[in-house]
Length: 451
Image (cartoon, rainbow, N blue to C red; front, side, top):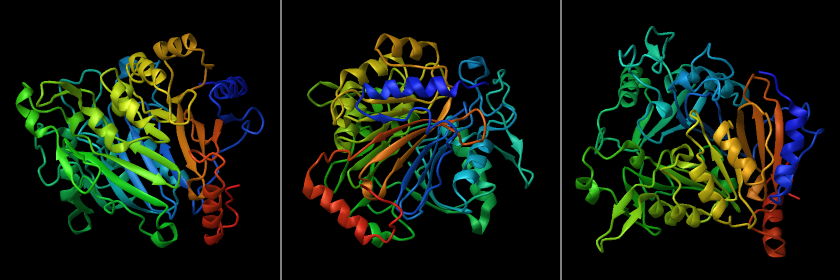
């Protein structure tokens, strides 16, 4: 696929100018590659393959989190949603190769799987007869077993801790899933080298934490577990089971998507929410009102800088109530289908002002016909850019952040556009600016400035 990078960069610059963001034109973006991570930075990678949702986070002290690695092919979506860099490798293998480029270590501290679906974990449905379009692909691993999704990554990287939204009640509420079978089979084969597998504790502020140098960022960095298995943090010291009393409402098992785990990362003034495939299905309240399930999650999360679109931004997710609670400045859509980052979700995002005012920055990994039509009708500049990896880099102390769009059509890590957000949520308040300068001075990383 050929990329008209210069035209894309020019249109991207006009796109962000309307939003109050700073965007680069060519140069400096022309020819730029993604700069390496340094201590003190928070990197959030949204990796595009065209067949799943894949996120990797590197925290300020180097702690590494793998948040889903999917493997779910739908060739009927080609060429509008391409398999990149090519269909010659599995999605899990492209993620593995991507990690080798941005993460030189061999150990991943946490693997957090949002829920048991193929496009988030991989699958054990090898050679299923009901897959005429080749959705259930695999390869033979080094140990002779069948691999895809997460298990491709685990071939080269050792995972220390694995957090499961239902452990130890696998299959609780929902049916046994081939993704769960894949992971259970993989864990069994690891024997004594298997990672510590534990339940995702809703409300916890210390289950996912900095592992390598926590004292340096104490009071500035945290991760709060917001929801899992239908249970939602109450905003204080407890949690509320929202879906348990609703089980009889469903004429089948509660959908896995609603059971997704979600967590909130805070780094200074920056905040980010990841919630898997949470949806807006109605919950019946005691007074007879019907309330979108994700509205409970939105109230627990509160306003954020960045939000991963839940359920890929499909029409049945991202309710107005959820959006009015999180008021994100930017939304990332992890995509493998043209139905994702839907016009319905985009309409709702556009109707809610972000916490910084203006319009939210919307970051689809790939733009197909319906998204292109929506962006044009709403006055956004668009381009013929290929699918992209979205990389969000938060500066030391969380004072500002940048969004890099990285060409996904090859492995060059070529930056096709970059957007900057300065002093997010803090404005010109001298006391708050002084706080971050003090943090910078405390941290002996003088090559990483915050202004």
